[in-house]
Length: 313
Ligand SMILES: Nc1nc2c(ncn2[C@@H]2O[C@H](COP(=O)(O)OP(=O)(O)O)[C@@H](O)[C@H]2O)c(=O)[nH]1
Ligand SMILES: [Mg+2]
Image (cartoon, rainbow, N blue to C red; front, side, top):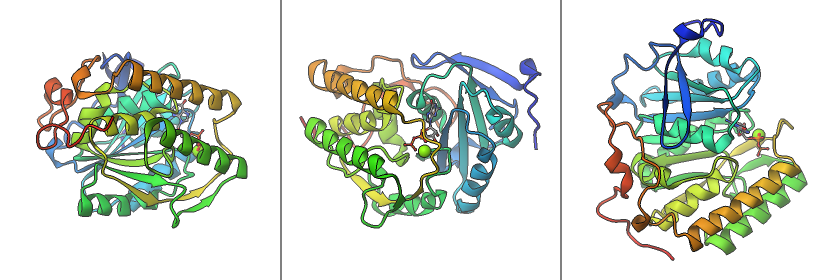
């Protein structure tokens, strides 16, 4: 197992490059990912982290225990300005199948997700909260549902009747309120947009991601809004188990910022029309192909058979 020494920056940080308007970030451990045949990765799981703390090691361990050995899977850890032991823990675990990215300033969960999702090599790409509140056991059934029904997105939902959720009443109310906002403003017909576990087909992500702007918690809503705008409306809600451990960063300021960002999504969706196929891609998409070469054009159009199926207004 490679050992990451944070002091030896010049050896451990092997490259730094800007992507799609995201600023620069760095990958730890020079050999990480180098020996894996890119075409062999079927599932990528992105973990956005900010000061994930000592429990990160156990969480990555339980994630890996839950993977299906028959499905080649990689984990992509994105440390977003972490100042605790996140980097050391993730760096120690770095390997061909645990890839670690870091940048020094905290830029938000959505930003970290974009960095990680841009790096994913799998045919299917998931992301999951790194604090361990969501039981990672769900990854396997999510993947089975994806394979079976080939929806555009499998969405973890706290409000699914089979979900087991141990959550404070205020958070339940806020979750309900936000799903109503999603329904009324954006006609997103799902019961929960915000649960931090989603699984997306690669071609859907390639179309949606370059059109996204959100850097903070409204990332999940924007993902669904852009997907719907491009005609990717086959969304399958699936149950999750959540044990809330009071480690949340969601406070009144964060709640206010989510509302502000939601208003910005509304403005981009209905006033600027920034998300539609005709709007083009403002940021140059960086999307790794199976052979490792950049394929920017592929990300400019929905890549299902021809144009997106319908263009909901
Ligand atoms: N990269 C990054 N990830 C974050 C940040 N804030 C939260 N997260 C991630 O988002 C997840 C959910 O955040 P949390 O504060 O636990 O929200 P809650 O579970 O909805 O109360 C965390 O487990 C982290 O994985 C951040 O500023 N940067
Ligand atoms: Mg949490």
